[in-house]
Image 1 (tube, rainbow, N blue to C red):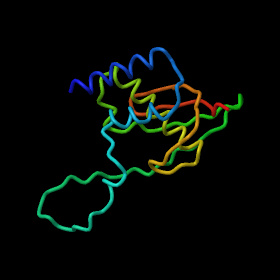
Image 2: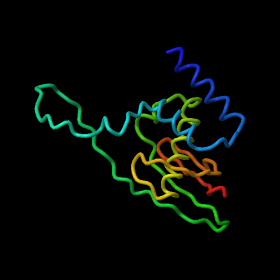
Image 3: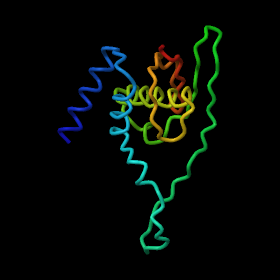
Image 4: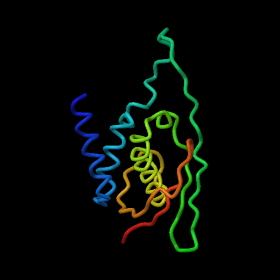
Length: 141
């Protein structure tokens, strides 16, 4: 718990300073805060019935599309995942911002799922509602 709080404090300080250090460190921290597991953990183990009760979650298909703006930037509007929607406002904005930045980078790079993105992204959340977020930005060359 102490490590989680230290990581959160570090994350908030980085966000307040508006430092564009690169996407990799923010993606790693965002994934850790979101509780994302390694991709190998999601694969089928081949076991079909263990007798245990499980909770099935519907997977939403990604229908978001990049939109090119008049100023040359791009915008991506995303549905905020349910596990982020219940966060306190002080935690929700920075976490959703980093998640949206990561999703924006994946769309810009054409990467599916949890592939590695090696891009520097400049941008910001241009709007956020209770269940959607729009990230507007571009690739930094």
